[in-house]
Image (cartoon, rainbow, N blue to C red; front, side, top):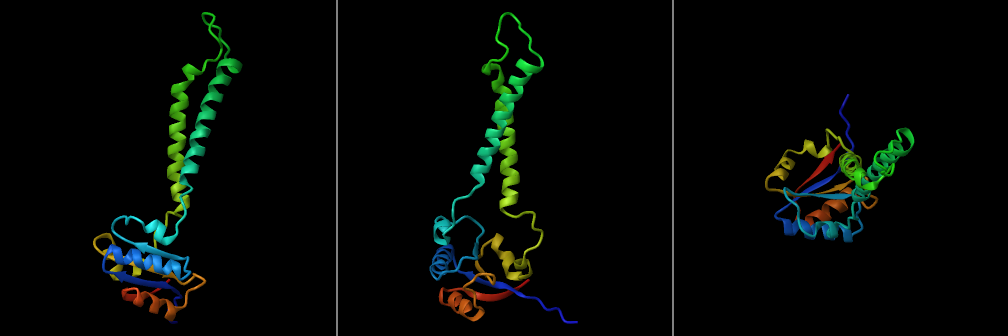
Length: 179
């Protein structure tokens, strides 16, 4: 039985970061939404060229930190006033000053957990395999190559039209990537 794979999309290589940035802007202007750029280093302005929104990770980290703050203060208030109320030297049962170290540490801990697990969730990781792993030339992306891929799941994707677009933008070595 023959191995029948579906098309995942197209992959094109570009000469330098400036060409890749221009191509990303042009692909976005043509109405494509499911495309990605691949580079060995961050390229200034690429987020704007691709029309990417800000990350939600900061909100997840904030929620973790606020949860840690609330939990730390509540736990120490409960322990000092409800579970083990001890009046020592006329001091109050709860004072926020002695609760600061534990509250700070718990806020940092839960913020870090939020950052790590939030990043994994938002990046849909772990993902041990990607269809681009089958393309031999794509391995150069970690060293000195610049690529743009357009997914077949994009509503504007048409194999021939998308290939012509990438060629007109200066893409070389355009490959049809299979799943």
